[in-house]
Image (cartoon, rainbow, N blue to C red):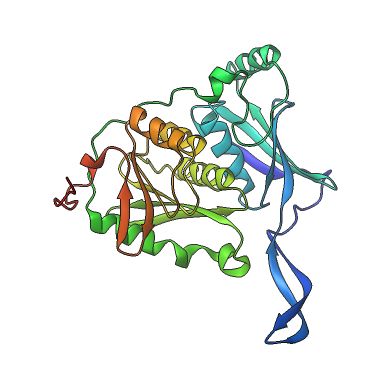
Length: 283
């Protein structure tokens, strides 16, 4: 797969902008500037058909296209994309992916059968049944210590470069025992941050079966679906999960950890993967 900025388009906008503002502090007003994240309409197209339009941070765009295609089931491997063009326009950015045969024919047939347009969140779905589609089962093989969870979450803030500038974006990271935090991606959208992470891991040949996905957002059903497509055994987040996210994590074999802050965290599903968890349970 190759990725290029198409000649008929300009450069995508930078991921942050410095904007003027008036600062009110201690009863006094002064002129200043604030770094804010850019939010751009990004169209993901496959073989000329628009699959979804997302509002996203215009960074790591090739990884975004690959990760989105993987987690939405358009492709099974990055090698199935023959070419990827990044086309910046006054209205936004188009990520034009061209699929190899025979996948291209199969995708065209799928598009002809779709009921209507789609939007953000659960993208590319065709019915209410697809919204709650089962996720691939993740084998219960890997084990992690509680200290691993604590160390993994503690390593994330230092790598959140965009958030350090703006205090306004989500992050998704991947932590491996013995290697630590191997990748972090950020975006104004939590789904987009995870898709970018998936794309980075896939393009880097990093398997997720023995590591931990780290999230700075709440854990909803879509994020568990994406993690399951990656075969990630553990998802750990700073915020709380939704009830639907918990149910899906339980059914697809993912250990879901949330409210992971400092030395504390809560395990909602498959606690057997955390081998040294506290043994003193409230009856």
